Image 1: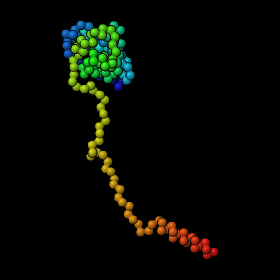
Image 2 (image 1 turned 180 degrees about the horizontal axis):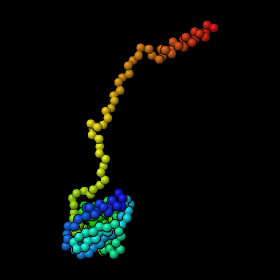
Image 3 (image 1 turned 45 degrees about the horizontal axis):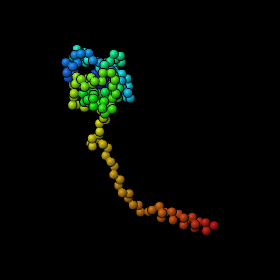
Image 4 (image 1 turned 180 degrees about the vertical axis):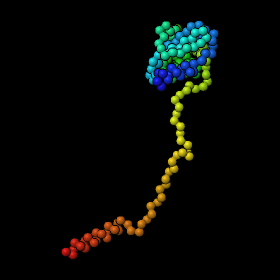
Length: 160
């Protein structure tokens, strides 16, 4: 997943569940490591959420994690505190606000959108296997032909 795809997906999936918690200004910078490497921020202000592909220097919390964990966190399928305890992220700043951040985001039971897997061919579309027919037996064999040819050659040598 590229950085641009990651930010686009976060913008698409992030939802606020508690507008009261999101009324006060609160900013979280996500520093992504590995695939989709880069920084983006999530800002809560006046009951709305904004996601932008920039660093946020005056953040309340900075979270360092991988792209998949960031998608799960912002999509509401992974709890911030659980991810921190499992070692899936590191946080600095006002870390005590992670719980309220998790409560402000809507929890979704749906799975995070992943890249679609290639479709498998149905049995009808698969090519038919060709069965091998048993070889038909011929009347003369190569072994018999060789022995006759060698007798003729011997007979010629002896007649000179």
